[in-house]
Image 1 (tube, rainbow, N blue to C red):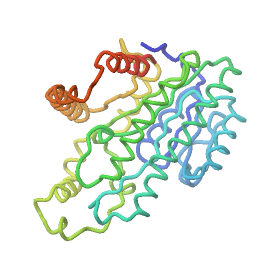
Image 2 (cartoon, one colour):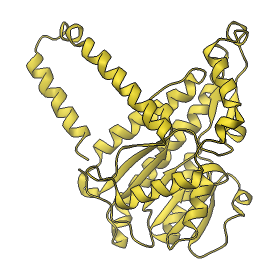
Image 3 (cartoon, one colour):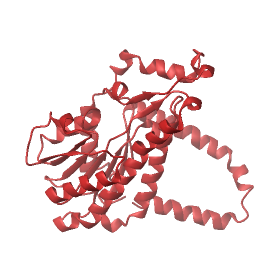
Image 4 (tube, rainbow, N blue to C red):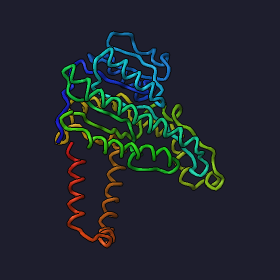
Length: 315
């Protein structure tokens, strides 16, 4: 189990996507505490709901600009000296048919959901390693707001789920690279449904393909119809509840795990992930004989696998 990060009462939280949804819920909650908060949005006017305070820094940031990322992080360090927790919360969905999704649409999605997120994470890790110790704090927490779709891909969003799967791989690999002495923890939050305006504000629909769009029984059509179900959305938990659980996990960890790399949130998320893992393990076991047919030295490869598994799980 990794060492728990000692979150101070004046911890600095860097929250992106603060104009609405989960980001707004984070900022509303944190601004009422002794924590210091960096509220990030594409326009300052979107942050007018946050009271002015010496403990609050409002920052304009387009996450697709590496220059803007460096400037925002530098402004934070200039004011507060460090960053204790990053909540990387900027993303949008691209839904529709894969065959009619344009290259431009797909690349713009990756620019925000993947490249923007990874650029910000790398910059904040540097601060946690180099600047935080100057203030007496060793390490920090890199949080990424993902979704159940980071491990279970649904129809109608191939490029969106690709960005989520890519971020899972990035986070898992990067957390294994950083030295345990730096005390930097990585956590991917994987919520299921949440009662926000995400579907109205953060979903882009691609042009429909007649081969798919004209089929009422098609999987993508069923998914899109389900997302229009307002009664279903009303059953989702409030973002405030989600935020409280995440903050508690950052502060106190999970018994036996500390700060987990993956944090499913919601009964729907845990249940879908549990079913997916069970099926994957069943299929994995069924493929053992076939897999070993390609192995010339099972002993050597087995040791390599154990070494890599130990490295990934040592944080």
